[in-house]
Length: 207
Length: 428
Image 1 (cartoon, rainbow over the protein chains, first blue to last red):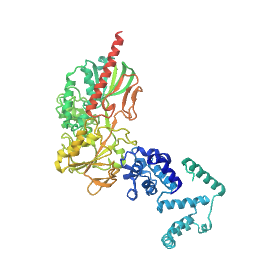
Image 2 (image 1 turned 120 degrees about the vertical axis):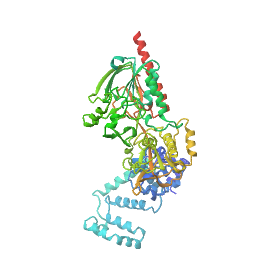
Image 3 (image 1 turned 60 degrees about the vertical axis):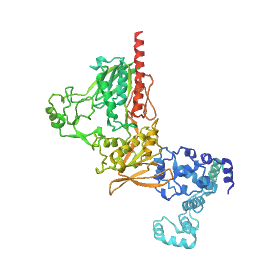
Image 4 (image 1 turned 90 degrees about the horizontal axis):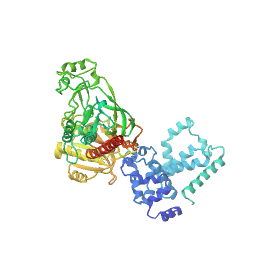
């Protein structure tokens, strides 16, 4: 368990709603939910989720901290905004979902091995390295995440698409040697570091 | 005629529904002069288009009849139908009101014999059945119509059809040369009893009203159940005329929704609870009603009515706001999709007919009222800054008939006070 997590538990004790209000983006709107169920019914991925937004909001109020922060639901959101435009109470549901995902991730409680979360992490690390996405490395890292055998199988299955992208100059095999980046790499890393510092300070993360 | 009678001792009541009739009568029976203006050709408003009232399940015709008789007997009321208020100026105790009187093309000689209606072949959409059927272009709006006088639809005036109606009239009542008139009156106080209209259900896109024939509004359902309605009181769904034995009611269709009407329309829960009993009345134990709701708000002392319906085995309740409706293209049945709140079960429920319990929107929404009139965030009338104009009934708040009558009586008393104060100031 991370220290931030222990601190958060200590600080908010049984009041998970207060914790969400204080730490999650748009968390103060969670209490506005009237449990009508339109978000749950409108979600195109609804049946694929562990918990619908409606259920998540009720769980927050019921103080089900571990279940909420350990849920895969927030990571399944595709940001289609269907729930948000239909919510009769105008809860910014999509934003709250992303806020919860971010908070769970920072506390180290987000589900391990959740595919969309894994890919997002992969994408961010790839991007943060040079300020540009290295498409080739991203693809390879994604395919070989499960080991050599499954990686080769996945790459083989996708080879026609890869070739097409190569012909269209969308992917460059030379990127395997590090790839392209932004001009001022040092400056870019400084920006990212500063942004992280500001965000950590705002959200009370010192660790 | 009216211009010479009206003074600043006169009360103007705008709207001839149950609230307007009540407000006018209460003031007139106190000896005050009242001008009652109504936009349509008849009194009764939306109340006249209901099948039954909750909670006693009696018929609105009964109460309307009493009120109409009181109006007929009272010489203090001047009734102007097909009349709209176009401008109000002045201030408390001394308003100048401009009215637009649309031509009826039938004069006072009319005996409501119906010969013009028989002569005419043209049909127009019937607003008294919410457009569910058509009526002749020379018509008496409904059986309870007051004044009992036919109306010629402007679409046939100047056509051979209009001439046919004129030729058929045995008493020379059809006057196709009637023109729109403008009248200016002096009045001391104004009561807006302009009422409400159902929220446009087509705006609730996921419910498919207007796209799916078997998704209707609660007001249309009233007409289906009414023996005077388009189906003669049989609950037949519009899509294919099949008996609708399995009916779903969707609550908060447009109400309590920041994207539509922000307010709770207050009557819809009771209206749907009442309408489940229409289904039972029509089909007995064969009927099946399902109410999809966020929470049942049986206002005031109506909790016992809710409990009575809960005990009815043909009625079931699903705590969920339906997310979307799709149509089963094979049989035209609407299929309701959503997730219920009691257990978070995902459902896809097929019904014969869906009734949307649509919310109440003030009829004056989008109408330019005098600047002095204060509206709340949902466009209900709160009153006027100068204290001489009042909202009554459903124009002032979403109210059922009972509460609309109470509100109208209160508005009437306020108006009488304004008139009395004006009179005493002038006496000094």
